[in-house]
Every structure is written in C-alpha cells, then in structure tokens.
Image 1 (cartoon, rainbow, N blue to C red):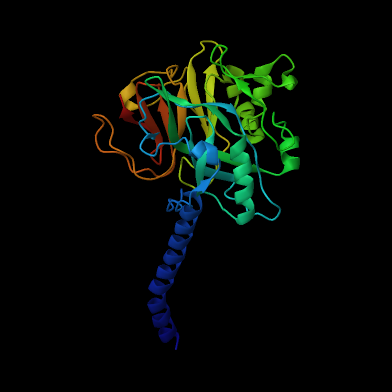
Image 2 (image 1 turned 135 degrees about the vertical axis):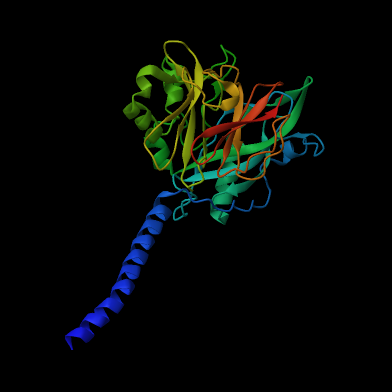
Length: 346
C-alpha cells in the first residue's frame, strides 16, 4: 500500500506543479490587465445638432477649416459652463464631454455633436445653452473670416460645484469675457478681477491639476502660462479611459514655454519643454515652444500623412495638435512609453 501511495504521489506531483504554475500565470495576467493602458474603440460620434440658426446661416459648407487649416485659428473670448441634470451619469472619469463644434464666421458656435461622453435628452438642452454662451474671435484666412471645425472639451458641473470651484463664471450664465489684446495674454474684463487678472484666470484650472503641480514642485520653478487661450486641454492622451490634462507652462527663470501633461491615473507631471528637453528625436536638445500660438485636441483615430513625415502613427489615445498660425503644425502623441512628435504641416 505504501508503494502504491508513493506511485500516486509521483503521478500527482507534475499535475500539482502545472496547476500552481497556471495559477501564478493567471495572477500575473490579471495584474497586467489592471495596470496596463486599455486601448479602446473610439466612441461613434453623435448626430449634429443646431446651436444657433443665425450663425449656421453664415456657414459655407465648402469653406470650413479643419485640421491643417492654413489661416489663424479662432480665439476664445467668452467661455460657457456645462451644467448637468440631476441623475445624469458621468460622461467619463472627471465628468468630461467632448464635442466637435463648428464656429461660424460670426464667432458663434453654429452646430455641434458629441464625440465623447454620455448624451441624454436632458443633457442636450444644457449643451445648447452652454455652447451659446461661447464667443470667439473668428478664424481668419487671407483677410476673410472663416468657419472652422474642431473638438471642444467641456467639464460637467452642477451649479453648486461651479460656485465652489472659484470659477470666473457666475450663475450658470455667460462666463467672464477675456480681452486678448494686451501682450497676447488673457485679461479678465469682469469687475471681479481685483487688479490681478492672471490670478483670476488661474481659477479656471481644475483644483486637482493645481494640487499636483504644487505637490510635484513644478510650481516652484514654473508657472501656468496664459499666452494662448485656452491655456489647458483635456483628453485621454495615454488611452487608459481616464481624464488627462495638458497645461501650458513657462519657466520662471528663463521664460521658456512648454507643456505639462498630467495623466489621470498618476500624480506625476510630464514636462515637455519650458527649459527641459522636449525629448523628440527630431528636435535634438530643443527646450522651448515659444512659437506655439494655437492648439487643440486631436481625438483618437486616423492621422493624415504629414509633409515629408513618413507614415502617420497609430494613436493609442488622443493627441495634441500644436500650431504656429499660418505656418507649421504637428501632433504630440503618446507611444505607450513616452511622448513623440509627428509633423503635420509646414
């Protein structure tokens, strides 16, 4: 009997080792699934809806500028605020809704559609009210005002949240106007400016972003830059379905410009430029993007082939389209390990 028991144990030993190995492998796979970025299928765009009939009447469908538009982009003058109805599910982590908007030659939003977020009948009415509050200096090309189409990020808030956040907007109505004529920096025309327009404008920065900038020590050597409006962008840049933020920064000592990127699943800051090397192979030791005067989010999806730039990248998330008006443009995108550059226009 004892020999039979020994024979059974010898036969079972390999099976036990295999089971243990399989359990260990399953644990490793589960851990990777929890930590690795999740590449997901882009959301199908919603239907177009009219924001302003009068503005829509001024839009020539054959003359709508899109990515690569050679003229100067529209400049934001007044921002709206999106209030969500009670019980509305959060669109994404952080309450982000992204729409594609067509800004008419009048500077008003003519039409829009939701390209990321949860759209409900109750939200549609609030979207229209929010987008009607936006006001722009129109895009220009060869001395003429043009309609342009581009993504616009909207943060969902309730009325009480908007009041607590220190926003320069009030009562859910039109936001404070920005005067961009002085040194190309936004100056708040609201009476609440209190003599320090930059400090008031900084209230628009999400509290979490400011908290991370302070905790990382970046705020000691750099400051948020308001030389381009908007001065921050939201998107899912690393493809993990969490809200990420890109903020324009300026090094205090040298005045060099750059972009700080904060991933939603991390408290670290990735600083591109502003006195630190951009890290793009094509740029060498370049550490300044003072030429940047316009930018927007390029939603995850196909990328048009650039000028002498080789095959376009397959985006794992959203990208930043950065531009010098009436000159060059390029995409800053996440490779899965770092940020890279793809030239779009020149």
